[in-house]
Image 1 (cartoon, helix red, strand yellow):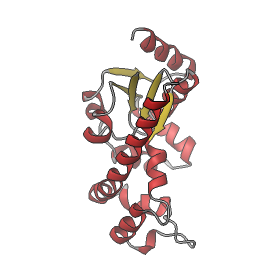
Image 2 (tube, one colour; image 1 turned 180 degrees about the horizontal axis):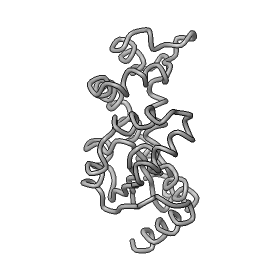
Image 3 (cartoon, rainbow, N blue to C red; image 1 turned 60 degrees about the horizontal axis):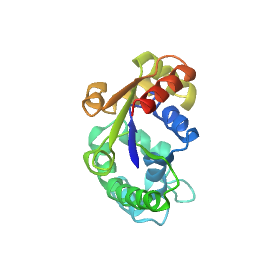
Length: 196
């Protein structure tokens, strides 16, 4: 059974590619969703994050306020690295459990692991093929602004806080350009699947 890793910068359209693959019968593991789950109140990563970033990142219910945490980490690479170091081990553990379930179920033709950060351990070492989704900078900025309600500078900051497109392309087995519409993207996904 094939495991496809889907990655790319924010606003490029990796989630759109994953949704297309899910409609085609893929079992999907979303590393971003897992990242949200592992930081829930009461879980080990929660306590490590609060210790690292302080109680100012908590909401009135003492849950991690993602926007407050985001303000800190997306303006400072070292803070982002600290957050990634904390959460990564828990995310990998969860992904491994998901892959085991997928392999033992035998009812899906392929597994898709979607992750914003194509890390060596927990992504690249778990997939058979890496699909990198790309889009022009201005296209990405507009998508982020529309989706998240950010202004231009906030959207640009999110892009700049991530890996450069060149870094993504270095790990690509296949590159999906996503500058137009969803039907064009779907055609390209199908072409990749048909070509094996």
